[in-house]
Image (cartoon, rainbow, N blue to C red; front, side, top):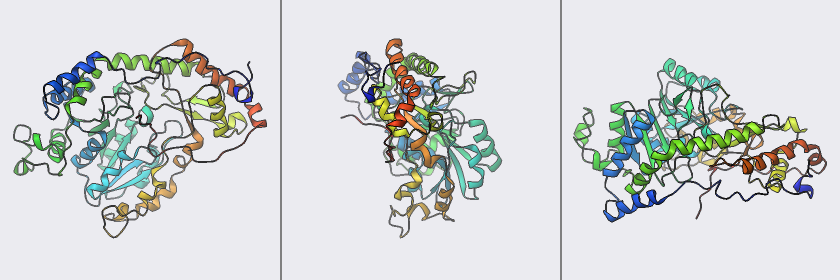
Length: 442
């Protein structure tokens, strides 16, 4: 085997990667769809968006879909629509993008953070029940980095304690849990469709549900142009039609909706190519020490969808305790763009500790709570180790064997020669994760 590149050898990735990482795929079909909206001067209308909603609802298998200007507003509307309000608690994993939980602050509610499972990086069902109180209203199930949350266990807990379940599908468009699309298990689901996601249409979001009342409450909350008797028949909403009850303007602009319609036509096919590429990569590494696939077990009938922001699970003990930063530096030298960690646990950010966002005279997180939920943060163990447990993995968008094999060879080289790295190890313990865990170009 060739000498490690970090020690003077040739790097494993030699072939031009071409467009294997380019995403989303934009063609003349997308451009023409946007131009149609521009030429029609209908950027702020709803006709194209309603068609996109109907098509998306049919695709995912729900009765209702409602377009939003971004995933954050879709999540906030979902929280409002299931009844989260003053003094309520939302249980959510701490290792996630902030939009999964932070909008509850605007509803005068608070978040109770839970730990994650080592292998799934999703909320640990065994860490939920002891966090439930009489003020708990809902559980947020985040399908983190595309991995389907164990919904059977989540739903069982929710039924036991009469809680609502919201799914955050922002990382997992097209993923399956036991053969059924994620986003179809909870009372309501919401997701981002920003340009970095697997299903990418621009700045946009979507809410889906089978519950007519939840759907209409989401409309009433932030869609003033649709809060009318054409869409609203829930009795307690009727007197307030005409203006958005939350005072928000959350509609999706139609250029994103137009792109969304085109992307949806091709998504299953493109998603399959991503799955073929990513699974092939991981199959090549099944016997490589130190790194394990972050994907459901074969034969489970669960899938990773579009594999948004894929991670690898790092096991330093299989490499003589090799520091994860040294490991990723060696991979970088081989031509792999990687780094340690994922979303830094939110409970460690001061925003969730002492920030008074709305001038209540006390930290917003406990301003309306009936207990100091911050004390529960001390029992999050796995999540606080995220920077030593996971690394960023190449996100292949196209199935090109030679390029994928070269990337896999880089991991194989480093795993086989870790003892050489231990001899030259310079540990770096700096925080490598991110509060956002994605990049914005431009």
